[in-house]
Image (cartoon, rainbow, N blue to C red):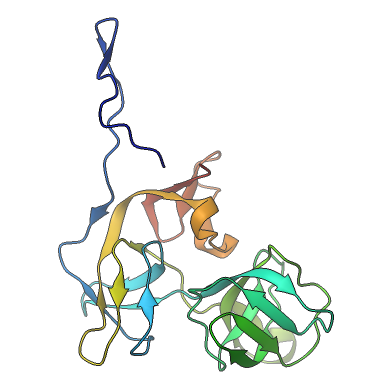
Length: 204
């Protein structure tokens, strides 16, 4: 988002009606419990916090860049934090259908355990878990975010903490959150974080 520090503060004697504030962060950091040393947590990463324990989990997802002809090998954007043990689903599907990951090569190539003809470039994969069996099985996101990381955090053996914003405006066309992480129904025309209505999203 462009910032113009020397822009006018008034127009023909009328004061500017808007003041664009930076993201407001929580006073303390959160210890991440589902990341490994060596991972880098970028600003904009969605997390689910436990206020009492001062811990958090990364809400994991991946943006599909390319799908190979075998319909199993998928290239995704970096920064997804998915593991080979993760289960995913194509965001926005109703109902969500669990897909198993066979392997992850490097940082951005995911191989599914079975062919899937539905995945296309531009889709978003959200980490899910399945509860119940048979017709009673329900597939849902592992975690739904209530905060957004607001400063770069490099995870090592001793430090697994990150800072988090509880208020602010996020560029959805930069972070590409899954539909399941967003609330578009409470206030029609607005896009809010599902776990925190003070974090809103715009397309810049």
